[in-house]
Length: 320
Image 1 (cartoon, rainbow, N blue to C red):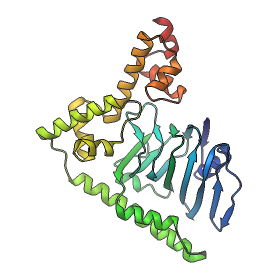
Image 2 (image 1 turned 45 degrees about the horizontal axis):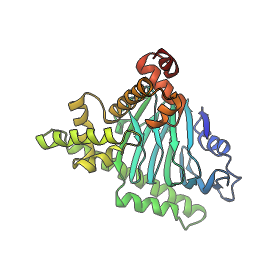
Image 3 (image 1 turned 90 degrees about the vertical axis):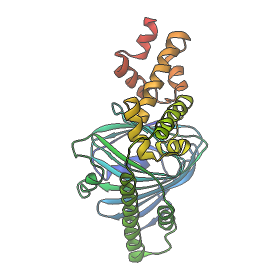
Image 4 (image 1 turned 30 degrees about the horizontal axis):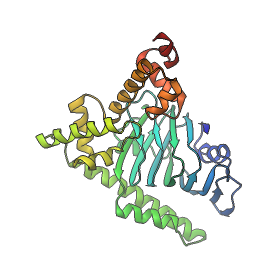
């Protein structure tokens, strides 16, 4: 199933998600906190939304979808979030950017999106546990400095491995036992601590450097081979780095140095090349080619194909 949203104000984010995904009316309300349950025709689980303070929201979800869900989000209002993928996550991407992301278990991402369309694909029959802090850009512009990003950019992201300390704080936020003013103060303090720990890990990663040795180059080539074998569902940058035995920062910088493109820019390039070969040689439908290379959202695939090869994949098939 496919859902499309357009966000033109900070407060739209929660309202549109709960409306378009047809969540039930809040079953629990405690001040600024609301708990919604996923409709049975979609799957099982719930979504908890909390207004921590003006310009800061805390969202937590624990859900299992009975079929894949495609989300198309048009970010007209600058969107700034810290996402913790505690168990599984979405495969998401920004058209015309060089990166595609697989939000695998155990990763955290600080993301900025401005006047772009984001495509996300939720897995079916997998438990997805996700905690997210949403910041109103107008009040949290200073976070862009930590990302080395500019307000006029369309997209920026940082990704790290969730540390035990971060996971502990996430669990405290989920299990918050307090009520009233104490509950609000607890949430605000813990969300700030979580953000601080994330930024601290980012700084540690930057200090590790990126000079490449012979073993590093060998690991980077090994990473490329793994990507070629997992095009339909590639590992995240962090998980890929673990597989080949180097840190994610060195892999990110080194891969571009060795191959002239980013890790997931390479994945996208290879996916589209494979789709083109399938259309040329096997005479399969465009939707089949899209699915075989890992794109369940056909319109997203068609947009990328058109940008890369100068024509729609359907016209390319007829040309052959």
